[in-house]
View (cartoon, rainbow, N blue to C red):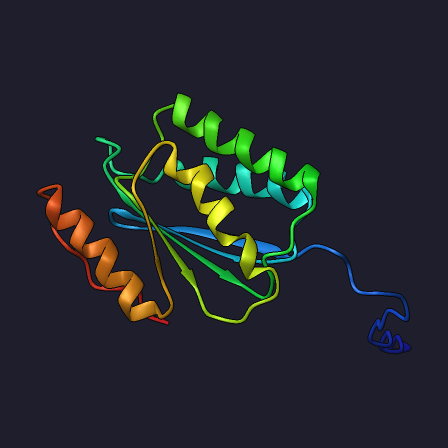
Length: 158
């Protein structure tokens, strides 16, 4: 019996895809998303699906905090911005609205000048704040949970 030769590792010679990726998880009463830009409309559609799936794991009373970490880049094309706005509006109409959203954005990432406009999209349906470290972001989420009369939470383990 002959062993098949191992396939070589695939290395693309072309340019890197123009979009990033998003991960969404639920930790008790906290929905935590990590978004790595740049962003395009396809990534926003994938994000909407990920949030919808994560939303099924939220507490039955739908009272939760939201932590959104943005890494890599805040660059976003016009189609992505429109898709993002539509997604936030859709979730709000379905009752998936957090007590607050905390943006974790470290200084100096490309496109950071767009952050205030992005925060305004969320601000239409909930209080929004910004932190520049995970520890301070988690503390803000816990403060919002406590202010709503809900128990605070330990952060997820890495």
